[in-house]
Amino acid sequence: VTAAEQRGGEGRTAAIVGLGLMGGSVARDLAAAGVRVLGHDRDRAVLRRAMEAGIVAAPLGRRLDGIARAHWLILAVPVDVAPVVLAAALPWSSGLRLITDVGSTKRGIVETAERLGCATRFIGAHPLAGDHRAGWQASRSGMFDGSRVFLCPAAGAGPAALDEARRLWRLCGAATEVLGAEAHDERVAWLSHLPQLLSTALALTLRSAGVAAGQPGRGGRDMIRLAGGSSRVWTGILLENADMLAPAIARFRDRLADLESALAAGRGPPLQRLLQDAASWADSG
Amino acid sequence: VTAAEQRGGEGRTAAIVGLGLMGGSVARDLAAAGVRVLGHDRDRAVLRRAMEAGIVAAPLGRRLDGIARAHWLILAVPVDVAPVVLAAALPWSSGLRLITDVGSTKRGIVETAERLGCATRFIGAHPLAGDHRAGWQASRSGMFDGSRVFLCPAAGAGPAALDEARRLWRLCGAATEVLGAEAHDERVAWLSHLPQLLSTALALTLRSAGVAAGQPGRGGRDMIRLAGGSSRVWTGILLENADMLAPAIARFRDRLADLESALAAGRGPPLQRLLQDAASWADSG
Image (tube, rainbow over all chains, first blue to last red; front, side, top):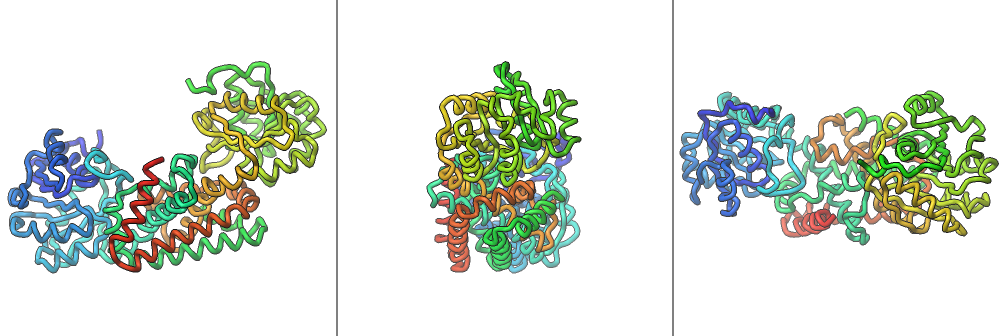
């Protein structure tokens, strides 16, 4: 029994905009926990499938007016679309106790919430979980179980909204950690966006060298898996966080140059020292 | 039932020098298939454990003289040690039908076999399987099941030796592919050594940025897993293949620079085009 399979969400209604990998997985966990889920997706076939699966109880409607019947609003659309959806949702938001999202960058959406005047109820969220596949068909229950979720409250967000956000993610089996949007974006530039970019660069390298994607062994496949992620979703994330990502890329270039120098020197000890440093660090995780 | 669990190795005796991840895993599969396994490891405690586990039937002896009783000799030591072991094994090699290895580079050991005059029976081997962990304690039966093994015959190697090599790997459940040592080393520079080096560079980057190895999410952890591999083993591999690796690193730098330019331009379409190219390629694997 995962945390999501325990009940505990009765009495709450969640409005989820975007039923892709993240929104769909949140919807599954919340529905399993007894939360009433209202949903919207720009792809009407996806919305229909989510309702047929018994996950989404009712549609939010094309104008999103169903939000007026919810306690929680969860924006689960690409980070460059979320501000637009938030603005569109505002007319129906007066009864909401929590407005949140699931995007991988937080400065943009938090600033938007503050500018639009809904900061007191806005707690941005970023679950460190997911999959390289995208869409409702990739969503699954339990995807957040045991994972960490960063919570980034807008300036002036109340403790009640934070409690609601913690309750939401507890129902999904995740542990939450509160930090500011700026600190968040810097941290994930290293933890998540740099690895994503390097996987993409490796995929482009092998592609341009005429290697077939099925050729690498297990280790190589691990390294190109992230590159298979949604280009639509990642374009927004990487562009929004380009300023935080730049120093991470620069530092990576330096470390790669260290390895190249040791290789070019052709002697074992300097190279082995670097490999040993990396291995000790990796094994400490 | 994996291929290794079927019998079919009766009547063969294998001498395995080095009972680490690779040698230990080969030993387990061969023993399970009915091959009599004689073994040696510089760590006497490892040899003792392999015998206590019923995998190694008898030691090869400190001078490796037990090789005289075997049909197959398998060198399973780091690639920079394998030539030395091969030379030490030669006095006992007259009855061998196959001399092989499991190293990730093939030019060095194949040239050594040719120079030492045992080319007719030498078929180098490189299984595209493994683990980021090292040593006998990480070895396991079935590790090669369903994986690919490159076979690189020395100049003048006979068809009988090739048949023996194919039989050996069939007993381990692996599929074999024959190619020249030079072509092999070039191919694995891209498929395996470049990903390994990038994982190491990422680990060094995060380490120097003060990130703890346990902090990244699932995707980031996939990207640093290879870095945890044995620095002893990988130093030899990367140094031996440095010439083939250099153009792969250079091409990677170019692709990373393409991504950085698109990021710096700050517009979606050029970046998304690159991410889409990478994703389509990765998803085709």
